[in-house]
Image (tube, rainbow, N blue to C red; front, side):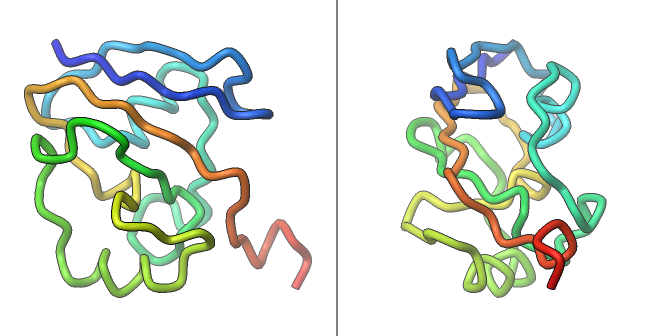
Length: 112
């Protein structure tokens, strides 16, 4: 089973984490199943950017981003070439290194 290494994040996993993930699972679902509480305000329907992550290693083994994901990513805080929505990123057969951004844009939690 592939391993996902989450780099340290101040609130979600201060020490970082290494978890095993079943191929075919999304990064978001794998994280949530292992008590890494990635935000997912739209309930993983590709309608927000709260589950935005950076794939630092292993991106080639993920499914290709569809147009809806790419359009949504344009609205993400801190977008970079390694950006994906974790709810849309389906794990393949290789290990991944994932970084969770320091900030996210969540209009509901930010009381806008």
